[in-house]
Length: 262
Ligand SMILES: C[S@@+](CC[C@H](N)C(=O)[O-])C[C@H]1O[C@@H](n2cnc3c(N)ncnc32)[C@H](O)[C@@H]1O
Image (tube, rainbow, N blue to C red; front, side):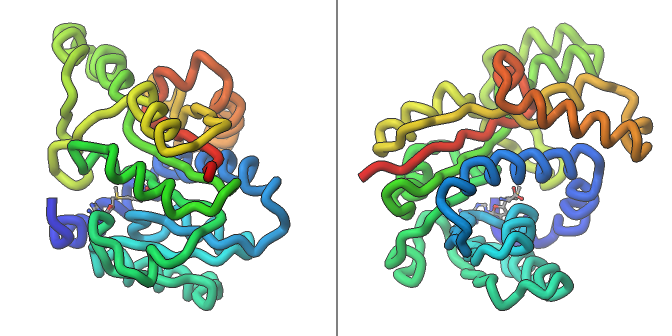
């Protein structure tokens, strides 16, 4: 996929982000990050958001007073991030760098960050190992790395429960790719079990496996999720389940939080 394809899909991406399921994704990630960042001190912390797009995660960190550098190869996404930060009055703490994560400029690699996010990038790359290694290498010792991706285990469940298609679910059990609607592209699917050894191999410790959208995708009445009371109850449940195993294993998205070593 190219940067212009991401730029072209910016409108449908914004619609997804503002949907109840999009909002749950960002709220749960923020909840998990907050728990891991608080022990690092009051901040402001320096956060690097690899493939941070239009700032869905960054904006929430900026509002908490942190400084964020977003790297993304899509100029449209970066312009949208700056615009959103401007609306919040937090743009002075935001840096945007237009670059490929596989070819980071010295301005990014010359620093070590308190936290590095790599959220929902791995589905666009076939081999996650170089990206995970690069993300960890940019975190200072004792800092936090957060890796998030679509959970391959969730695909058969979704096909059976939402699409009412058990034959397709059976067929998907060993499939490593699916079609992503928002950007109209093929996605590579990973599992937390595959990414944890990459983090460990890069020297990380204290790895926590969290789930995002543990139950929301199994509730097929999407209309109800627009009701504020229903949404608030669903969000409270999702936050309670995010680190409560076994739920993360079948959640739509996995988020791995780890501490960087030497
Ligand atoms: C699904 S979007 C969202 C990412 C964002 N972290 C989030 O979860 O809100 C994926 C983003 O990855 C960016 N991207 C994909 N491959 C990239 C690469 N090799 N280098 C830099 N950015 C990349 C795209 O431009 C797009 O903005």
